[in-house]
Each structure stands twice: as C-alpha cells, then as structure tokens.
Image (cartoon, rainbow, N blue to C red; front, side, top):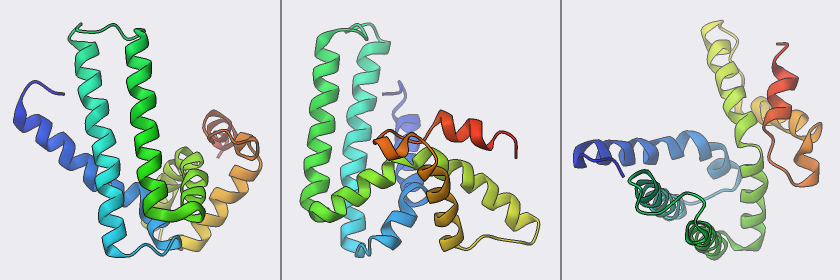
Length: 159
C-alpha cells in the first residue's frame, strides 16, 4: 500500500470508480441487479486491496517477489475471488465474466476509439462496440482461452 493513508484512500476510491468503466458492459449484458453490482465491486475491491498489501510487502523488501509464498498468496486470492464471483453470478454468469475478462485489453483500446468517435460526432453505440470487440477477439488468441492483448494491439496498430 502507499505510505500515506490519504493517497491510499484516493487510490482505492479511484479503483472502485474505474470498475464501472471496466465492467459496465458486463453489468448491462449480464443483467446484474444493483445489489449484485455492489457485491461484484466488493469482491473486486477486496482482491485489489490484497494485491496492494502484497505489493507493499514486496516493495518494502519484506518478502522477495519470487518467493513461493508470494505465488501461493496470489493463487489463494485469485481462487477466493473466483469462488465469490461464482457464488454471486452462478455458473453461467461466471463463465460470461471469464470470457469478458479475456477481452479487457481490447475493450480498453476500443474505449479510446469511442472517445475519439464522440469528439468527431459519430459515436459508437454499446452494441457496436461489443461487435467490434468480438470481431477482434474471434480473430485472436481469445479462441484458445488466452486474454486478448498483444495480438489485438498489433492488429489495431495500423488504424
């Protein structure tokens, strides 16, 4: 965690706010209720704070980055988060979340495009953005279960 409590609180608040941007489309397409959205955010924030705590221990030299304990703690936090999301969303919703998470990088790229399109007076609709994401995802490593990342960036670099 950061050394000053106020900076830490700002960082945590900023991360919580960014969840609406990152997962807004998932909330809409998944039909999550306001209560489910809040619980989803609680789960994500718990994991974020765990990652901050572990990062602070590494950065302060308390534990080396390559220590097996670090890998174990990361794996436990990921498993805990997965179990909580599965309980919240059910099997089908959890599968949708996993698929959505695999396309996060490409969604970020298209989010930038969408901002430019708005400024140009030709905004994308949410369904249009989703179609673009799926086209690129289907042409990438996504089909093999890998996150869409560097391939998408390379593919879009000519645009």
